[in-house]
Image (cartoon, rainbow, N blue to C red; front, side, top):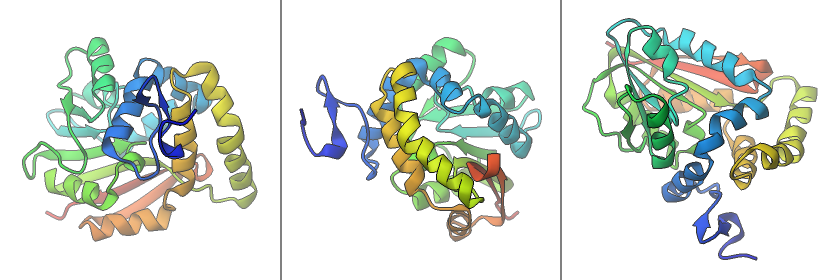
Length: 245
């Protein structure tokens, strides 16, 4: 039964997956509904690779004691913990209240903040580093988010973006695409509280810009020394940039 356009399926009157137009209320609602089992589902669907990816993000951010780090799309703050462990002051920020609530129960000492990546509730030049893992793809206006990250980063500071990307080896890229569209949804049904959200996940990954295209968006937003490094054959890519001092 459909309660609206096919890309906005509902369950019990609630949006359960977002469209690729990425309306903020749809995306937030979708993540609210997966919050309770989000970390477990990620671990299963990535075959444990998400733990390795988080370690690589932590190395790239290179947080130091007393530095201020903004962790955007932080969800339950699993991604924030490595930065806090260095002695940095880390602010987990997300626009899904459900995710923030689950995170706050687990990590009561962290300063969870509700915020939209396209309109960040922080002053200019506040953070030594801004990072976002697997969240930029869900923002409605990528260019606006990259400009906002630039605005709240202090001169000399850095941005680190970890995002699904495009495998560089063509045969592997074919296998990976098959996994996304065929294997991922059934696995999600077994472990997720909202498997429809992972259909959106697969579609949004397939539609996301490749490595050079995202690097160009970073440059257009003002970031300098833009570079990227592929992880797991390009399934995931780390992008980096600096704000000129």
